[in-house]
Length: 352
Image (tube, rainbow, N blue to C red; front, top):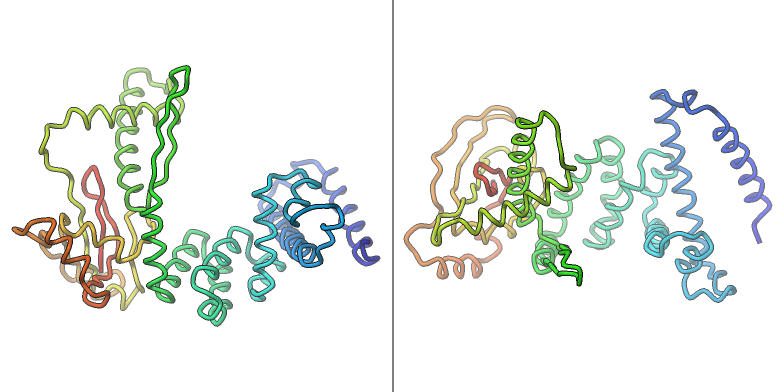
């Protein structure tokens, strides 16, 4: 049975929401009100998640014959099962994350921050995460969301480098593409790529997509296709160009830029040109064909020297080089790869 306090609080909340619902949208459409509404929405989300955790732990859902709290919520609240499971999972995680829970309840952070924080805690373990939780939550409060995700990814790599490499390898091992044809002849495409492979495909596809848009605009001064249709046409064009490429043609090579001294001024950098953070080990397979470029920094924004681009390995069989890289010790092989920049139609990767 609901507590008397709970019933009274929910009644007051309902009255307040009724008042907001009755208000004209224009009356709530200024910037300050939008910020305030979204902040209170996150607070309510946090309260609901904490209540779901208590409901899960209390096991009162068993009385209705439900097998799990998520199943009960999915049925009674008419939400998808993945949504119910995510709410229960977040609630359980918050029990051991006091700083995260407090910040969410205050509206200082949102579910978009809590999700990656709980994921990283699962990945690195409580012993590594808990001492730094307050600091990470402070980053979530102060940084733009994209910058926070970057900072969290770098923290995860520093806290558990082996775990980060294992996760990167799992992403690589999980690559898949399914292309199947229906009985009507329509083709269905679905897949998953690791960050670097996905960057290669995305950049090539985007380049062709932009070409199609420019040609379309030049001819009609308008767009005759939706973005999704143009992307589908770009994929077909990419396959046609690949088929037309002569056998033995040279493929674009990655560019790995080593930023010497940059870490001293600006902190660790290990990411692609798009900003996606990658692990040092995920770049090792590229080094047999990569060009290396050195950039020396004498301050956070001052470049002292830019070296000549060179091949890292030349003249030896590729198979032998790959074997040598794979067998190198973690210490000797740590090239501290950093930014994966693209100077070709394919991709590049940067290291420091």
